[in-house]
Length: 320
Image 1: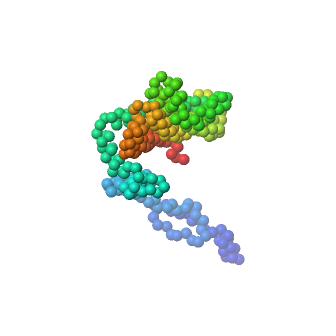
Image 2 (image 1 turned 90 degrees about the horizontal axis):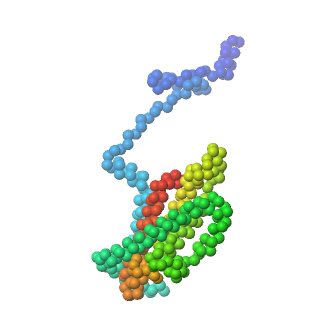
Image 3 (image 1 turned 90 degrees about the vertical axis):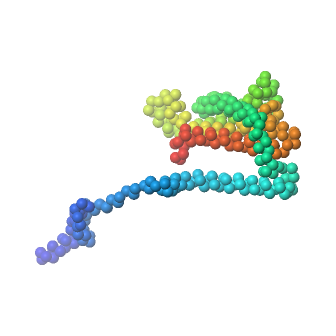
C-alpha cells in the first residue's frame, strides 16, 4: 500500500533538477518531465574579430555603400546611353518627325567646349550667372522661410498673405521681365528680382506644408512642460519643418535657374543664358548645346550642394 502511494506521488510531482553553470563541469541530463529550477545557460560564443586587412576594409566599405554605388552606376549607364543615342541620331541626320538635321553631334559640342574654355569670356558668363543665382536665391530663402513659419503658425497672417501669393505664383518668369525692367533702375537688379521670384514661391509653399504637418502632440507636450512660444518654435516647429524647408530650397533652386536663364536671354548682356541666346542668333549650334549642358551641370551641382547640406543639418530625417 505504501509503495503504491509513493509511486502515485512520484507521478504527480516530477523530480526537481538543478542545472549546473558552465564552470561546474558536465552534469547528467535531467530525466524526462523534470522541473528545472535553474535553466542551463547557453555557452557564450566568442565575438568575431573584425577583419582589419585592406581586403576586409574594402569589403566592409562596399557592403555599407552598395546602394550608393549601384545608384551611381545606373546613373552613369543612363547618361552613357543618352550620349550614344544622341550620337546616332545626329551623325545619321535622322528625321523621325523630330528633326535632327541641324542638331550638333557630341563631337562638335566637345570641340566647341575646347574653344570656349580656352578663353576667359565663357568663364565670365558662368561667374555672372552664379553671382545672380546666389543673390536671388539667398534673398528668397531669407524672406520665404521666416514668412512661411509665421504663416503656418498664425492663421490670421496666412489668410491675409496667402491669396496674394496664389495670384502671383502662376505668373511665369518671362512675363515678369517687362515689369521688372520698369521697377528696377538697372538690368542687373531686374534679373536678380526675377530669380528671387522663381525661388520664393516653392520655398514658401514647402515651408507652409511642413508647418501643417507638425505633430500637435509634440506641441501640446512642449506647452505642458512650460515652454514659451519662442522655445516651442525653436525646439518643436523648426526641427520638424527643416526637412521640408530643404526640399523647398532644392525645388526653388531649380526654378531659380529657369527664371534666371529666361531673364538673361531677354534683357541680359552677360551670363550663360545670354551666351546661349547669342549662339542661336549667330547660328552657332554647337555653342547652343554647350550652353544648355552648362546650365544643366550648374543646376545639378547647386541642387546637390543643397541636398548635401540638408542631410548634414537634418540627420534625424534619414532615420525615417
